[in-house]
Image (cartoon, rainbow, N blue to C red; front, side, top):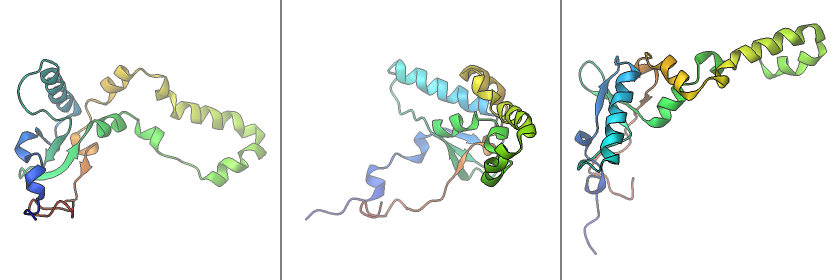
Length: 149
């Protein structure tokens, strides 16, 4: 039986990935991803990824930023927060006079759904990378077996 393969035998090397600082604005990330996409479309030789690594001031990798993270960041914070419990919404119908105000508040909270994708991108591009990134929690090292991975 042959030697067992290790994670390092099949992984993409970390140097292939673009890196961005935690304090960088999202517009910098979009520029990098756009450049990578254009290189892929033009069949430029090289390795281009849709995920970037995020580094801190000491140049240590502290997170990653993927397309999923970017799209998730386009949802305004006000729409992510629920201010009332489910019980509150169940009893809402018993307060007929307040219904109009509550519906108006909910409509305001989700007004962003009527925005175009481009408008959302323009609105959110000045967010910092650290507000959007996914922190990393390494569970493997390169000498681990493929079975462990």
